[in-house]
Length: 445
Ligand code: FAD
Ligand code: DHB
Image (tube, rainbow, N blue to C red; front, side, top):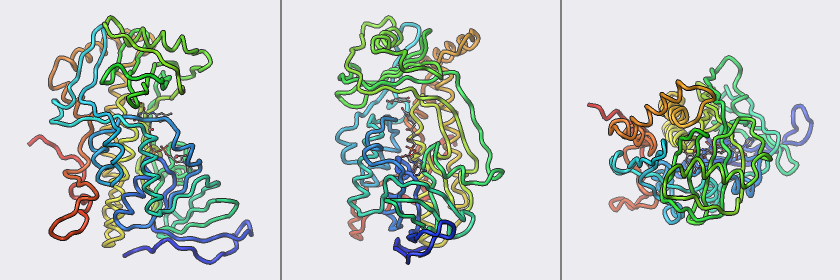
């Protein structure tokens, strides 16, 4: 085994601050307790690899933060295999299709039929986070909330360190590897020296105004609406709560959107000429989310490995953000298992390359969905292209199949076993799949 279990080392003076500093050690230091950091810790725990998670917010804050809600088939399978799928299986809403609405009519895309039996599950990101935190604490794993002044050191060496402050104490955490799971605005990506990475990005001339409404959904499936007033999305979080989005300008002032205006706009864009009418309810939460595409390459430097939003951002159309974060840490957990188990570093060396294949597929899909469904200011040519593309997607089996395949998500692994399934022959827990089984292969002979 390479690396060593988490333990406190003697207190040593801080070299520059001359404050006493507590030195600790773990195998993998994880910065950020979003879906990426928490699931990575869970998967590593299943492989008997020690980790410490550092989060700069409180537990309450991250458990209440409203974000994504659509889980791909592979994400659901992985969460179940990791032993954190119990509530998801009970409370998640399984969907077999979506509706594309344009020109006054709705067109259903049958995701399950077109993808060979797959589906998506609507289950809030904060519910995934709650389940992972509960499992982490039940396993007595180290998870430190409200840390301050996190900095990374010696990431090019085999003994990288994370310095942080917690409860008024300075702590130095020695690691064998660091996982940067601290989101787009975190400290890990900026710790990579300039010149050691490239950035690829695109901005969009719009944003999403999202609301949560205390009102039971009156439709079973999501509606993506292309409308001359702008894009709108009908989604949900639970049998009691509806989630709705409107295309707005990037610098939109929420104060200019009283409840009546939000509902008026949602009615106009979502109902079009249909017999169905949107039901209003008390607005529980509202916010404006900017839209961008962003990828850093490579997603690693020395012993620092970036995962999730720390490495890439997609515009939300198509709901790929959290699913990509989860796919990254699956690949990273597999590579770390090989590294600590057999000393093989080739999978870790290939981490970025392995992830980027899926990342760019999702970047393309999210850009494509965004470009097809949003109103671009004063661009009549673009509008003609959009209508042509929408007509094609709802009338061609090949085009609809491509949308469905990407929407439900390309496979993460060829097989995933539930965590608690016992192998009768050996009475051992079945292992999670190995790296050889990871990722999709071409299905064209
Ligand atoms: P995050 O969830 O961002 O987690 C990073 C964690 O690191 C956070 O808990 C943060 O507090 C912590 N952190 C940051 N800096 C530090 C530091 N210095 N030290 C310690 N901890 C730190 N995706 C969809 O698919 N559908 C959606 O509808 C959707 N809506 C979104 C709405 C908003 C407002 C945002 C911001 C994102 C949305 N996304 C959506 C994207 C999706 O939520 C992200 O892709 C997903 O959260 C990525 O997970 P992550 O773990 O990589 O990062
Ligand atoms: C949701 C968000 C998305 O970006 C999307 O494409 C579908 C659903 C949601 O928050 O429910």
